[in-house]
Length: 188
Image (cartoon, rainbow, N blue to C red; front, side, top):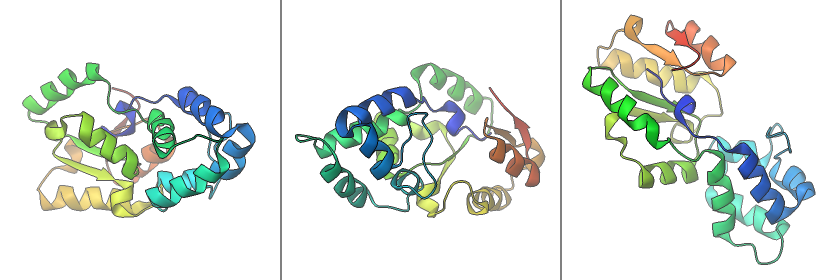
């Protein structure tokens, strides 16, 4: 099972609201690259940071001068973390049951250092066998590298690809899952 983005609690409207309050809509779009519809412009600071291609310090030091007076690093981190606010509590029982039934639970998720630290500090990740985060692989989303890392892991641990389900709702992930021979499902 891939239990990455589909399990994450997303609050894009809250994220947009916070960044608009901190930076104003114009700077939110031009400096951060976050549009009011929740999409990031191609090659924007937002997309680069999301993929781990820009450091946390560079991200914050670029946004602070473009923000309203009184904005702090904590304000920026808080606004960013709102976008992927972690795994909702109601999923943990479900995940632990899957693990107890002998399933191999893998996290495959586009993620950056701030979200990674937030998840690690707030959640017990022990029910996951392995986690593949794009920022740890230094890869943009989505690229073959993250999928190849999962396939290498499956081979190294003797896990059967035919028994691996790729659960996500992003079209490109479904296509890649099918290309790598994983069964796919769009929802839990």
